[in-house]
Length: 142
Image (cartoon, rainbow, N blue to C red):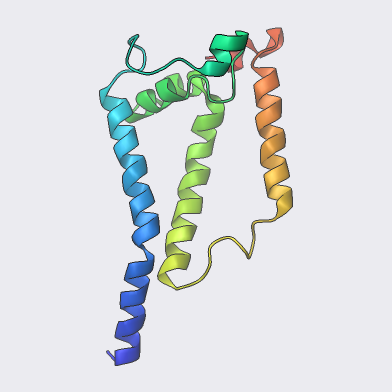
């Protein structure tokens, strides 16, 4: 192994600190939510949007969905917040891409994330938000 290759490996390893730290923080959060049941009253604060308006926000049911996923129950999780459950594989792919690009010393975002992706995500969130509060969208409500 040449000195240049060893240096690239060390810098690649250091560059993985951010993706690995993020994965560790997310894993710790999942462990906490898995251990402290959000279905029990008093463990977590109520959703401020739901408290003020009586309407569900896109995140309502998210803690209970994470709890269900942590306990290996994706069907219950999808019933509580289907958007969150659908986002988990996407987030895993984005994290893997971030880690791989960091290892190679490349920037994460620039090559394929475009403004249209942000607008698409915002549109999906708004449609989900509105849909879960309409009578025909009861299946989207937590």
